[in-house]
Length: 218
Image (cartoon, rainbow, N blue to C red; front, side, top):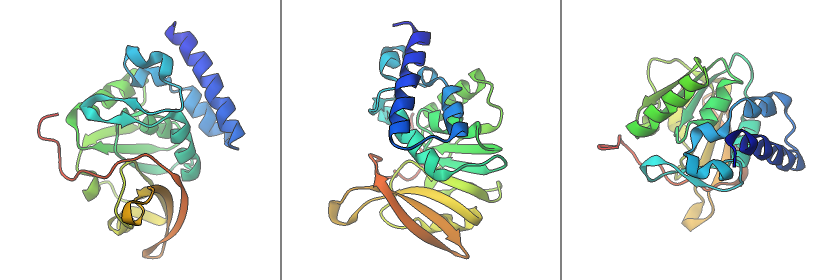
């Protein structure tokens, strides 16, 4: 299939699914439409880029579906002027869409390969307000001040309290938290109130646990 046609038809189908879920944020939908998803996947997956399914990426990982990206970003409620930390770059699609909504996005990943590919994709799309870095996401980032939003796409065993100090007052963190005794992993919306988090559990997500440290080879 022609890539441009795949983009047009895929985006139309995605928007129908999102509106059926009640996601109708114009700024978010526009940001998704302006970020061609086929740029973030190999040609072999161009026809499936907009399907509601996981797709393999480099370094043995996977990219979440565009439906899940939209759902997470809708819950993040990113506004112009916000500074965003994206933990788990993956394909870079989530960070690229967020960059069209925010003032600045820092995205980090343990894999150098994924960071380099994401940087190339951001440059191709002319996104100058998003920066990819190879870092251990569990340690956050230093020298960047506080963030209005933090989005993690790897799961935690419990409340990620180490990130409270990275959030601005009233800031929000979207974090997958594994259920007890093998229960389902759910995305949680954590709002910073004073020096603690106020937690709201949202929906089940397929994210895998964090792997600490930097990848030695990839």
